[in-house]
Amino acid sequence: MPAPSTPSWRSWSPGIRVVVRRALDDVPADAPPPHYTDVVGDVLAVDDTGVLLRTRRRGDVHVPAEAIRLTKVVPPARPRRPAP
Image (tube, rainbow, N blue to C red; front, side, top):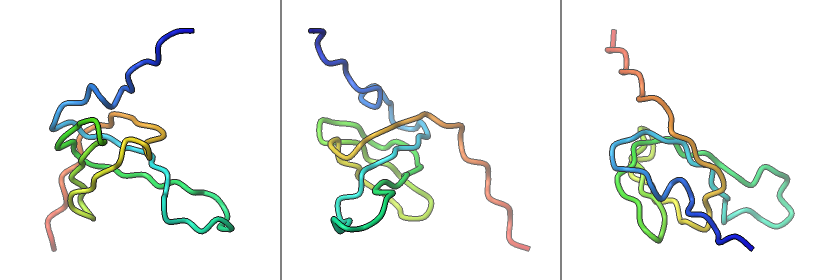
């Protein structure tokens, strides 16, 4: 049996922008799917406990390793438009 591979998010460096699909941990057992949410942001730190992202809406968000389901590196965010 092959050894388990290292998840791709473990190789991320601070500063790259990513999307992480995470399992929700506060969903009632009888709630209809989906039981996931996406977090988009810039990587601040990666360690054994998970990944820390800086998001535009929620600030810094820690996604625990056991909640990570899918990951993807995405292009940098477009600059915000100036207020009229």
